[in-house]
Image 1 (cartoon, rainbow, N blue to C red):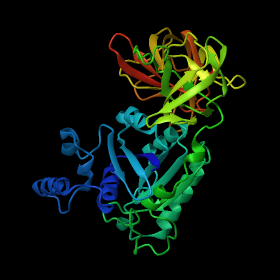
Image 2 (cartoon, rainbow, N blue to C red; image 1 turned 135 degrees about the vertical axis):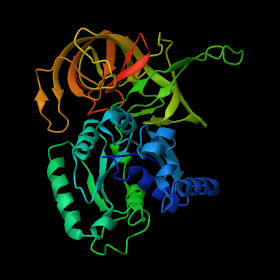
Image 3 (spheres, one colour; image 1 turned 30 degrees about the horizontal axis):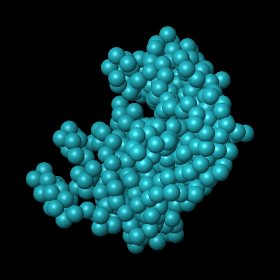
Image 4 (cartoon, rainbow, N blue to C red; image 1 turned 180 degrees about the vertical axis):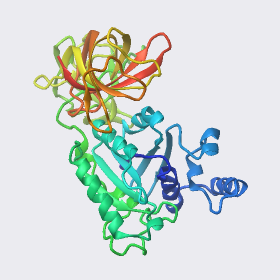
Length: 416
């Protein structure tokens, strides 16, 4: 069954957690004891209704403040598709959590309060969705029940967002009016908005075409682990395990191993169920080659005439996730696909104001939750693509070696 990952985003109190709770509840994807628990909690707090946001807001601080702080993942399925939902925070100080949740998403749902219209945080999250190259964006205009199901309010917000989205790299945009609290247009069609003729949110997610979003042209197979059984029945077995990050490989294909540049052919492919004739993104497989080559973790298998850049100078957009600012001259560890390196921050070219899209070229450092264009010099070459071409080989994380904390997420613009 097909799998869709999607993230919710938007400003505080726009109803992201309630929307997910409603989707889980109306699709019969929660257990009776879970429902009893949130009904009891809602009653104990004096709520007039069952607060479905409690299905995702599990931390004590989240329940006390009525906000989402950490990314909450929920899993459910319908007869048509499996889903992984990332409920991301709306507060500006938790922007880094939103980036984490959306980085692997196939689609993003940005919620807007129909009473307030587009907020600064709505625009901020829409920009970050665009920056992360999430292929599909849904604008869910929530709380339509509080504006008397007004078509004029819906059209006004839709027109304003479409105008803003024209400045971003958004390839697929849908706009759906909903009421997460009452369930209108979430799973079942609303009788209160007869003027809306589009799909419900769940139906849209069930029918969203994502197969063409995968890069099936550029073969990229970063080696994660070398398998040597050391068994009498497998004296000479040497398999290379990892996840396909792009393209299609078949038994007998001629390939190239980087960074050594040695050519060889695919002898066999194994997936979880046994021998396979073909491997494609995002399958996890073990590949055996016809020649015994010196290959280890961090190397990459690709096509002879279609190779990633082998580069040590990296231009990238970086979202900074640490309370300690990033500045030129700083030394950090880099985790890129299965390859580890160290890097020097050579230059901060500009800090990008994600609200106005203004480039502050006078910036001398990147603070927590800020985004900027940075040039890095790595100790060993990275086998990289531009992020817009491949979201896996074009992304990396930055790590503070003194604390082993992830301090930044990067999207490669150019590898030189």
